[in-house]
Image 1: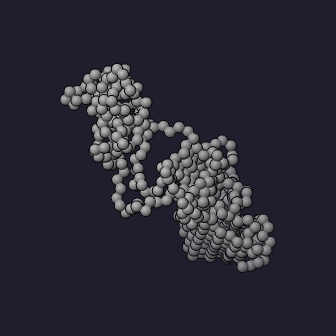
Image 2: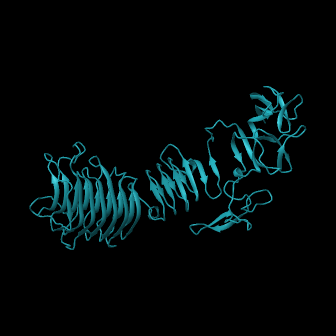
Image 3: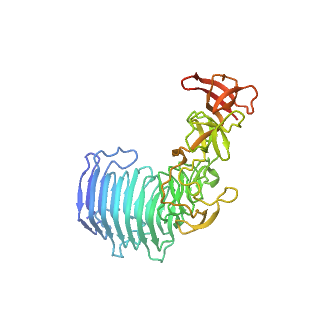
Length: 481
Protein backbone atom coordinates (compact mmCIF):
# COMPACT_ATOMS: atom_id res chain seq x y z
CA UNK A 1 0.00 0.00 0.00
CA UNK A 2 0.87 3.67 -0.09
CA UNK A 3 0.69 4.24 3.69
CA UNK A 4 1.07 1.31 6.00
CA UNK A 5 -0.43 2.93 9.12
CA UNK A 6 -2.08 6.34 9.05
CA UNK A 7 -3.57 8.53 11.80
CA UNK A 8 -5.25 11.45 10.05
CA UNK A 9 -8.17 13.58 8.99
CA UNK A 10 -9.03 15.98 6.16
CA UNK A 11 -9.61 19.65 6.89
CA UNK A 12 -13.41 19.20 7.10
CA UNK A 13 -13.23 16.67 9.96
CA UNK A 14 -11.66 16.43 13.41
CA UNK A 15 -8.46 14.42 13.47
CA UNK A 16 -8.08 11.01 15.11
CA UNK A 17 -6.60 11.50 18.56
CA UNK A 18 -5.59 9.45 21.60
CA UNK A 19 -4.55 6.63 19.25
CA UNK A 20 -1.89 4.06 20.13
CA UNK A 21 -0.04 1.94 17.61
CA UNK A 22 1.80 -0.75 19.54
CA UNK A 23 3.95 -3.57 18.11
CA UNK A 24 3.09 -2.60 14.51
CA UNK A 25 5.14 -3.51 11.46
CA UNK A 26 4.89 -1.76 8.10
CA UNK A 27 6.38 -3.74 5.23
CA UNK A 28 7.44 -2.11 1.90
CA UNK A 29 4.86 0.69 2.02
CA UNK A 30 5.66 3.94 0.28
CA UNK A 31 5.21 5.70 3.65
CA UNK A 32 5.33 3.26 6.54
CA UNK A 33 3.75 5.42 9.27
CA UNK A 34 1.96 8.72 8.62
CA UNK A 35 0.43 11.07 11.20
CA UNK A 36 -1.22 14.18 9.72
CA UNK A 37 -4.16 16.56 9.70
CA UNK A 38 -4.68 17.83 6.18
CA UNK A 39 -5.57 21.51 5.88
CA UNK A 40 -3.75 22.43 9.09
CA UNK A 41 -0.24 22.45 7.71
CA UNK A 42 0.87 25.84 6.42
CA UNK A 43 1.48 29.05 8.32
CA UNK A 44 -1.78 30.52 6.97
CA UNK A 45 -3.84 27.47 8.02
CA UNK A 46 -5.51 27.38 11.45
CA UNK A 47 -3.82 25.16 14.00
CA UNK A 48 -5.67 21.90 14.46
CA UNK A 49 -7.80 21.74 17.61
CA UNK A 50 -8.04 17.96 17.60
CA UNK A 51 -4.76 16.56 16.20
CA UNK A 52 -2.92 15.55 19.33
CA UNK A 53 -1.94 12.87 21.84
CA UNK A 54 -0.97 9.82 19.83
CA UNK A 55 1.71 7.25 20.47
CA UNK A 56 3.80 4.80 18.49
CA UNK A 57 5.49 2.16 20.62
CA UNK A 58 7.68 -0.74 19.48
CA UNK A 59 6.97 -0.19 15.77
CA UNK A 60 9.08 -1.21 12.77
CA UNK A 61 9.23 0.29 9.28
CA UNK A 62 10.80 -2.28 6.98
CA UNK A 63 12.08 -1.40 3.47
CA UNK A 64 9.77 1.54 2.69
CA UNK A 65 9.65 1.79 -1.10
CA UNK A 66 7.73 3.78 -3.74
CA UNK A 67 4.99 2.12 -5.81
CA UNK A 68 2.59 2.92 -8.66
CA UNK A 69 -0.49 3.40 -6.49
CA UNK A 70 0.38 6.99 -5.60
CA UNK A 71 3.05 8.69 -7.70
CA UNK A 72 5.45 10.86 -5.70
CA UNK A 73 4.64 9.35 -2.29
CA UNK A 74 7.65 8.26 -0.28
CA UNK A 75 9.71 6.39 0.29
CA UNK A 76 9.65 7.31 4.00
CA UNK A 77 9.51 5.42 7.29
CA UNK A 78 7.67 8.05 9.37
CA UNK A 79 6.05 11.42 8.68
CA UNK A 80 4.44 13.67 11.31
CA UNK A 81 2.64 16.90 10.42
CA UNK A 82 -0.11 19.03 11.90
CA UNK A 83 -0.11 17.07 15.19
CA UNK A 84 1.13 17.87 18.69
CA UNK A 85 1.79 15.65 21.68
CA UNK A 86 3.18 12.78 19.59
CA UNK A 87 5.40 10.26 21.37
CA UNK A 88 7.39 7.81 19.27
CA UNK A 89 9.20 5.30 21.46
CA UNK A 90 11.34 2.31 20.43
CA UNK A 91 10.99 2.88 16.68
CA UNK A 92 13.04 0.97 14.07
CA UNK A 93 13.45 1.91 10.42
CA UNK A 94 15.32 -0.78 8.52
CA UNK A 95 16.42 -1.08 4.90
CA UNK A 96 18.32 -4.13 3.69
CA UNK A 97 17.34 -3.77 0.02
CA UNK A 98 20.14 -1.91 -1.77
CA UNK A 99 18.00 -1.51 -4.91
CA UNK A 100 15.72 1.10 -3.26
CA UNK A 101 16.84 4.67 -3.99
CA UNK A 102 16.04 7.12 -1.18
CA UNK A 103 17.67 10.14 -2.82
CA UNK A 104 15.67 13.32 -2.14
CA UNK A 105 13.92 11.80 0.87
CA UNK A 106 14.21 11.73 4.64
CA UNK A 107 13.64 8.53 6.58
CA UNK A 108 11.84 10.26 9.50
CA UNK A 109 10.32 13.76 9.09
CA UNK A 110 8.55 16.23 11.37
CA UNK A 111 7.13 19.14 9.38
CA UNK A 112 4.10 21.33 8.56
CA UNK A 113 3.17 22.39 12.11
CA UNK A 114 4.31 19.17 13.70
CA UNK A 115 5.09 20.25 17.25
CA UNK A 116 5.67 19.01 20.79
CA UNK A 117 7.09 15.80 19.37
CA UNK A 118 9.14 13.34 21.40
CA UNK A 119 11.31 10.86 19.48
CA UNK A 120 12.98 8.45 21.89
CA UNK A 121 15.03 5.31 21.28
CA UNK A 122 15.10 5.49 17.49
CA UNK A 123 17.18 3.11 15.38
CA UNK A 124 17.66 3.78 11.65
CA UNK A 125 19.72 1.29 9.67
CA UNK A 126 20.82 1.03 6.05
CA UNK A 127 19.39 4.18 4.41
CA UNK A 128 22.70 5.14 2.78
CA UNK A 129 21.16 6.89 -0.24
CA UNK A 130 18.69 9.06 1.72
CA UNK A 131 19.28 12.77 2.17
CA UNK A 132 18.57 12.67 5.91
CA UNK A 133 17.88 10.05 8.55
CA UNK A 134 15.84 12.46 10.73
CA UNK A 135 14.70 15.84 9.40
CA UNK A 136 12.95 18.40 11.62
CA UNK A 137 11.77 20.76 8.90
CA UNK A 138 11.82 24.46 9.80
CA UNK A 139 10.66 27.61 8.04
CA UNK A 140 7.38 29.53 8.12
CA UNK A 141 5.22 26.39 8.18
CA UNK A 142 6.93 24.98 11.25
CA UNK A 143 6.18 25.32 14.94
CA UNK A 144 9.05 23.27 16.35
CA UNK A 145 9.56 22.13 19.95
CA UNK A 146 10.91 18.68 19.13
CA UNK A 147 12.88 16.53 21.57
CA UNK A 148 15.13 13.76 20.23
CA UNK A 149 16.81 11.43 22.70
CA UNK A 150 18.55 8.12 22.12
CA UNK A 151 19.19 7.68 18.40
CA UNK A 152 21.33 5.04 16.68
CA UNK A 153 22.17 5.57 13.01
CA UNK A 154 23.83 2.63 11.24
CA UNK A 155 24.98 2.96 7.60
CA UNK A 156 23.56 6.45 7.84
CA UNK A 157 22.10 8.82 5.27
CA UNK A 158 24.04 11.79 3.92
CA UNK A 159 23.00 13.78 6.99
CA UNK A 160 22.15 12.16 10.29
CA UNK A 161 19.89 14.57 12.23
CA UNK A 162 18.86 17.82 10.54
CA UNK A 163 17.10 20.88 11.98
CA UNK A 164 15.65 23.56 9.72
CA UNK A 165 15.36 27.25 10.57
CA UNK A 166 13.50 28.44 13.65
CA UNK A 167 14.05 25.31 15.75
CA UNK A 168 15.24 27.29 18.78
CA UNK A 169 13.36 25.19 21.31
CA UNK A 170 14.43 21.78 20.08
CA UNK A 171 16.75 19.41 21.92
CA UNK A 172 18.89 16.51 20.66
CA UNK A 173 20.84 14.20 22.94
CA UNK A 174 22.46 10.77 23.07
CA UNK A 175 22.92 10.27 19.33
CA UNK A 176 25.40 7.82 17.83
CA UNK A 177 25.86 7.79 14.07
CA UNK A 178 28.01 5.70 11.75
CA UNK A 179 28.63 5.88 8.01
CA UNK A 180 30.88 3.97 5.68
CA UNK A 181 34.04 6.05 5.25
CA UNK A 182 33.71 5.81 1.47
CA UNK A 183 32.03 8.66 -0.43
CA UNK A 184 31.55 10.78 2.68
CA UNK A 185 31.93 14.16 0.94
CA UNK A 186 29.33 16.58 2.30
CA UNK A 187 28.12 14.20 5.01
CA UNK A 188 27.19 15.67 8.41
CA UNK A 189 26.26 14.02 11.72
CA UNK A 190 24.08 16.87 13.06
CA UNK A 191 23.13 19.85 10.91
CA UNK A 192 21.23 22.94 12.06
CA UNK A 193 20.33 25.89 9.87
CA UNK A 194 20.28 28.20 12.90
CA UNK A 195 23.17 28.66 15.33
CA UNK A 196 21.03 27.72 18.35
CA UNK A 197 20.61 24.08 19.22
CA UNK A 198 20.68 22.24 22.54
CA UNK A 199 23.06 19.34 21.91
CA UNK A 200 24.53 16.87 24.39
CA UNK A 201 26.34 13.53 24.36
CA UNK A 202 26.48 12.92 20.59
CA UNK A 203 29.17 11.00 18.74
CA UNK A 204 29.76 10.20 15.06
CA UNK A 205 32.13 8.25 12.86
CA UNK A 206 32.64 8.15 9.10
CA UNK A 207 31.14 11.59 8.39
CA UNK A 208 33.07 14.38 6.77
CA UNK A 209 31.73 16.76 9.45
CA UNK A 210 30.35 15.74 12.83
CA UNK A 211 28.55 19.01 13.59
CA UNK A 212 27.55 21.89 11.35
CA UNK A 213 25.60 24.38 13.44
CA UNK A 214 24.32 27.62 11.94
CA UNK A 215 25.77 26.50 8.63
CA UNK A 216 29.26 26.59 10.17
CA UNK A 217 31.46 23.58 10.85
CA UNK A 218 31.52 23.34 14.64
CA UNK A 219 34.39 21.65 16.52
CA UNK A 220 33.50 18.38 18.14
CA UNK A 221 34.79 19.42 21.56
CA UNK A 222 32.01 22.01 21.84
CA UNK A 223 29.54 19.17 22.24
CA UNK A 224 31.60 16.57 24.07
CA UNK A 225 32.52 17.59 27.60
CA UNK A 226 31.82 16.42 31.12
CA UNK A 227 28.99 17.98 33.05
CA UNK A 228 28.71 21.14 30.92
CA UNK A 229 25.47 22.62 29.68
CA UNK A 230 23.63 25.48 28.00
CA UNK A 231 20.17 26.51 29.23
CA UNK A 232 17.83 29.24 27.98
CA UNK A 233 20.47 30.74 25.70
CA UNK A 234 21.07 31.50 22.03
CA UNK A 235 24.23 31.08 19.95
CA UNK A 236 26.07 29.96 23.09
CA UNK A 237 28.32 27.12 24.14
CA UNK A 238 30.21 25.73 27.12
CA UNK A 239 33.43 23.95 26.20
CA UNK A 240 35.27 22.85 29.33
CA UNK A 241 34.44 20.41 32.09
CA UNK A 242 31.43 21.38 34.23
CA UNK A 243 31.06 24.70 32.39
CA UNK A 244 27.71 26.43 32.11
CA UNK A 245 25.90 29.14 30.12
CA UNK A 246 22.42 30.34 31.12
CA UNK A 247 20.12 33.13 30.00
CA UNK A 248 22.63 34.52 27.51
CA UNK A 249 23.02 35.43 23.85
CA UNK A 250 26.37 34.54 22.28
CA UNK A 251 27.74 33.50 25.67
CA UNK A 252 30.91 31.41 25.81
CA UNK A 253 32.18 29.56 28.88
CA UNK A 254 35.66 28.52 27.72
CA UNK A 255 37.66 28.06 30.93
CA UNK A 256 39.16 24.65 31.62
CA UNK A 257 36.58 23.82 34.32
CA UNK A 258 33.77 25.37 36.41
CA UNK A 259 33.52 28.40 34.10
CA UNK A 260 30.09 30.07 33.77
CA UNK A 261 28.36 32.90 31.90
CA UNK A 262 24.96 34.09 33.15
CA UNK A 263 22.42 36.67 31.89
CA UNK A 264 24.90 38.13 29.42
CA UNK A 265 25.26 39.30 25.81
CA UNK A 266 28.35 38.76 23.65
CA UNK A 267 30.44 37.69 26.64
CA UNK A 268 33.23 35.12 26.92
CA UNK A 269 34.47 33.84 30.29
CA UNK A 270 37.94 32.31 29.75
CA UNK A 271 38.60 31.69 33.46
CA UNK A 272 38.04 28.53 35.45
CA UNK A 273 36.18 28.50 38.78
CA UNK A 274 34.37 31.75 38.04
CA UNK A 275 31.07 33.31 36.99
CA UNK A 276 30.99 36.17 34.48
CA UNK A 277 28.27 38.64 33.51
CA UNK A 278 28.71 41.09 30.67
CA UNK A 279 27.19 43.02 27.81
CA UNK A 280 28.28 44.68 24.59
CA UNK A 281 26.49 45.60 21.38
CA UNK A 282 27.41 44.04 18.06
CA UNK A 283 27.74 40.39 17.17
CA UNK A 284 31.27 39.45 18.23
CA UNK A 285 31.66 37.76 21.63
CA UNK A 286 34.72 38.81 23.61
CA UNK A 287 36.23 38.38 27.07
CA UNK A 288 36.65 42.17 27.04
CA UNK A 289 32.86 42.46 27.33
CA UNK A 290 32.84 41.16 30.92
CA UNK A 291 31.34 43.62 33.40
CA UNK A 292 31.19 41.48 36.57
CA UNK A 293 33.29 38.47 37.53
CA UNK A 294 32.97 36.31 40.65
CA UNK A 295 35.94 34.06 41.48
CA UNK A 296 35.15 30.96 43.53
CA UNK A 297 38.75 29.96 44.27
CA UNK A 298 39.87 33.17 46.00
CA UNK A 299 36.50 34.85 46.69
CA UNK A 300 37.31 37.92 44.58
CA UNK A 301 34.57 40.07 43.02
CA UNK A 302 35.44 42.31 40.08
CA UNK A 303 33.06 44.90 38.60
CA UNK A 304 33.49 47.60 35.98
CA UNK A 305 30.57 49.65 37.35
CA UNK A 306 29.61 50.95 40.77
CA UNK A 307 28.39 48.70 43.59
CA UNK A 308 25.30 50.22 45.20
CA UNK A 309 23.49 49.24 48.37
CA UNK A 310 19.73 49.50 48.47
CA UNK A 311 20.00 50.07 52.23
CA UNK A 312 20.45 53.60 53.66
CA UNK A 313 23.61 52.49 55.45
CA UNK A 314 26.08 55.33 55.75
CA UNK A 315 29.55 54.29 56.89
CA UNK A 316 32.58 52.14 56.08
CA UNK A 317 33.68 49.75 58.82
CA UNK A 318 36.12 47.03 59.88
CA UNK A 319 36.12 44.35 62.57
CA UNK A 320 38.33 44.98 65.63
CA UNK A 321 38.78 42.82 68.72
CA UNK A 322 37.97 44.40 72.08
CA UNK A 323 40.66 44.65 74.75
CA UNK A 324 38.23 43.30 77.37
CA UNK A 325 37.11 40.39 75.19
CA UNK A 326 33.53 41.61 75.55
CA UNK A 327 30.98 43.27 73.29
CA UNK A 328 31.11 47.09 73.24
CA UNK A 329 27.72 48.90 73.01
CA UNK A 330 26.66 50.48 69.71
CA UNK A 331 27.49 54.19 69.40
CA UNK A 332 30.56 54.02 71.66
CA UNK A 333 33.61 56.01 70.56
CA UNK A 334 36.66 53.71 70.60
CA UNK A 335 40.43 54.01 70.41
CA UNK A 336 43.24 51.57 69.68
CA UNK A 337 45.42 50.02 72.37
CA UNK A 338 47.91 47.90 70.50
CA UNK A 339 45.83 45.96 67.96
CA UNK A 340 42.68 45.94 70.12
CA UNK A 341 40.03 48.53 70.95
CA UNK A 342 38.52 50.05 74.10
CA UNK A 343 36.17 53.00 74.81
CA UNK A 344 37.96 56.29 74.11
CA UNK A 345 38.68 58.94 76.76
CA UNK A 346 39.71 62.60 76.68
CA UNK A 347 43.05 63.00 74.98
CA UNK A 348 42.74 59.71 73.01
CA UNK A 349 42.88 59.62 69.22
CA UNK A 350 39.45 58.31 68.27
CA UNK A 351 39.58 55.33 65.90
CA UNK A 352 35.85 55.17 65.16
CA UNK A 353 32.41 54.27 66.49
CA UNK A 354 30.77 50.91 67.18
CA UNK A 355 28.33 50.85 64.25
CA UNK A 356 25.20 49.06 63.04
CA UNK A 357 24.90 51.12 59.83
CA UNK A 358 27.98 50.13 57.82
CA UNK A 359 27.43 49.60 54.11
CA UNK A 360 30.88 47.99 53.72
CA UNK A 361 32.36 45.80 56.48
CA UNK A 362 35.83 44.27 56.19
CA UNK A 363 37.55 41.59 58.24
CA UNK A 364 34.61 39.39 59.19
CA UNK A 365 36.43 36.14 58.30
CA UNK A 366 33.04 34.69 57.49
CA UNK A 367 33.72 31.15 56.30
CA UNK A 368 36.81 29.81 58.08
CA UNK A 369 39.60 30.59 60.55
CA UNK A 370 41.53 33.69 59.46
CA UNK A 371 44.82 31.74 59.65
CA UNK A 372 43.71 28.92 57.39
CA UNK A 373 46.17 29.93 54.64
CA UNK A 374 49.84 30.84 55.09
CA UNK A 375 50.79 34.46 54.35
CA UNK A 376 53.96 36.27 53.43
CA UNK A 377 55.61 39.12 55.35
CA UNK A 378 53.16 41.64 53.90
CA UNK A 379 49.91 39.73 54.52
CA UNK A 380 49.51 38.30 51.03
CA UNK A 381 48.83 34.61 50.43
CA UNK A 382 51.68 32.19 49.73
CA UNK A 383 50.74 30.24 46.59
CA UNK A 384 51.72 26.77 45.42
CA UNK A 385 50.84 24.42 42.55
CA UNK A 386 47.92 22.13 43.35
CA UNK A 387 45.92 19.63 41.29
CA UNK A 388 42.44 20.92 40.38
CA UNK A 389 39.21 18.96 39.89
CA UNK A 390 40.01 18.36 36.22
CA UNK A 391 43.51 17.07 36.99
CA UNK A 392 45.30 20.22 35.80
CA UNK A 393 47.81 22.04 37.99
CA UNK A 394 46.62 25.41 39.31
CA UNK A 395 48.13 28.02 41.64
CA UNK A 396 46.26 28.06 44.97
CA UNK A 397 46.94 29.38 48.51
CA UNK A 398 49.02 27.04 50.71
CA UNK A 399 47.02 25.75 53.66
CA UNK A 400 48.35 26.23 57.19
CA UNK A 401 49.26 22.85 58.72
CA UNK A 402 47.66 24.06 61.98
CA UNK A 403 44.25 24.43 60.30
CA UNK A 404 41.71 21.86 61.56
CA UNK A 405 38.85 21.53 59.03
CA UNK A 406 36.82 19.30 61.34
CA UNK A 407 36.75 21.93 64.10
CA UNK A 408 33.57 24.02 64.32
CA UNK A 409 34.14 27.66 63.39
CA UNK A 410 32.08 30.75 64.33
CA UNK A 411 32.53 33.88 62.20
CA UNK A 412 33.53 37.12 63.92
CA UNK A 413 29.95 38.33 63.49
CA UNK A 414 28.85 35.71 66.02
CA UNK A 415 31.59 36.36 68.60
CA UNK A 416 31.26 39.07 71.30
CA UNK A 417 34.95 40.02 71.33
CA UNK A 418 34.78 41.20 67.70
CA UNK A 419 33.12 44.58 67.09
CA UNK A 420 32.19 46.47 63.91
CA UNK A 421 33.89 49.88 64.02
CA UNK A 422 32.66 52.60 61.67
CA UNK A 423 35.75 54.43 60.39
CA UNK A 424 34.47 56.84 57.73
CA UNK A 425 31.08 58.39 56.96
CA UNK A 426 27.92 59.21 58.88
CA UNK A 427 27.66 57.33 62.18
CA UNK A 428 25.35 57.28 65.20
CA UNK A 429 27.25 58.27 68.35
CA UNK A 430 26.33 58.27 72.03
CA UNK A 431 26.57 61.84 73.33
CA UNK A 432 26.11 63.90 76.50
CA UNK A 433 23.95 67.01 77.08
CA UNK A 434 26.64 69.42 75.81
CA UNK A 435 26.44 68.27 72.20
CA UNK A 436 24.47 70.31 69.63
CA UNK A 437 24.27 70.36 65.81
CA UNK A 438 27.46 71.88 64.32
CA UNK A 439 29.66 71.08 67.35
CA UNK A 440 32.97 69.28 67.17
CA UNK A 441 33.43 66.39 69.58
CA UNK A 442 35.93 64.50 71.71
CA UNK A 443 35.45 61.35 73.79
CA UNK A 444 34.77 60.89 77.50
CA UNK A 445 34.33 57.27 78.65
CA UNK A 446 33.33 56.39 75.07
CA UNK A 447 30.63 59.10 74.88
CA UNK A 448 30.85 62.23 72.71
CA UNK A 449 31.16 65.57 74.44
CA UNK A 450 31.59 69.05 72.97
CA UNK A 451 35.11 70.43 72.43
CA UNK A 452 36.33 73.88 71.42
CA UNK A 453 39.74 72.62 70.31
CA UNK A 454 39.20 69.35 68.43
CA UNK A 455 42.11 67.06 67.62
CA UNK A 456 39.94 65.49 64.91
CA UNK A 457 37.35 67.20 62.74
CA UNK A 458 34.43 65.03 63.78
CA UNK A 459 31.39 67.24 63.50
CA UNK A 460 27.81 66.76 64.67
CA UNK A 461 25.31 66.86 61.79
CA UNK A 462 22.23 66.73 64.02
CA UNK A 463 21.05 65.41 67.32
CA UNK A 464 18.83 62.37 66.81
CA UNK A 465 17.74 61.96 70.47
CA UNK A 466 18.29 64.46 73.25
CA UNK A 467 20.29 63.42 76.30
CA UNK A 468 18.29 61.07 78.55
CA UNK A 469 19.41 61.06 82.21
CA UNK A 470 17.96 57.61 82.81
CA UNK A 471 19.97 56.17 79.94
CA UNK A 472 22.95 58.47 80.53
CA UNK A 473 23.31 59.26 76.83
CA UNK A 474 21.68 60.91 73.83
CA UNK A 475 22.27 60.05 70.15
CA UNK A 476 23.90 62.32 67.58
CA UNK A 477 24.58 61.77 63.87
CA UNK A 478 28.27 62.57 63.39
CA UNK A 479 30.34 62.80 60.23
CA UNK A 480 33.79 61.30 60.67
CA UNK A 481 36.63 61.53 58.18
